[in-house]
Length: 190
Image (tube, rainbow, N blue to C red):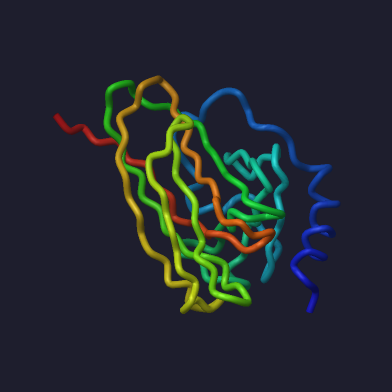
């Protein structure tokens, strides 16, 4: 079996020619919260370095790994994202919002089953402001049972576009928090 680092190096060589930078214009609606596009390699992961696009998500920090459910169970659909590629990384997506309107973000959190249980940590940010810290204990994780936990927070949009970001704060070269099933819903609360 190949080590994760060797596979990352091999995958990165092929990806560097096909990845670009994030589009300046926001998406009209938040989409691809289950990370179903692009497709990861079957039964493995595909690495995305900082500055690249992963579908509608922009990758930052130490990069991320898009994981097929043949390697680790997904919370929804068939793919998830490890926020530690070659170090603590991040994913962000900018989408259209209505100023003054309240939105709810939900997401499923797990962590890479590591050789030793590591608390996986990170945060969720809106327009660069930290809205929620998260921690996941990987003690009982297996690739087939990732033990996802659902997290939720709300925010009020300040502008016509908003950037949602998930960033790892786990000090590990390749084992990090895993997110999936991200949803953003507007509330017509009064």
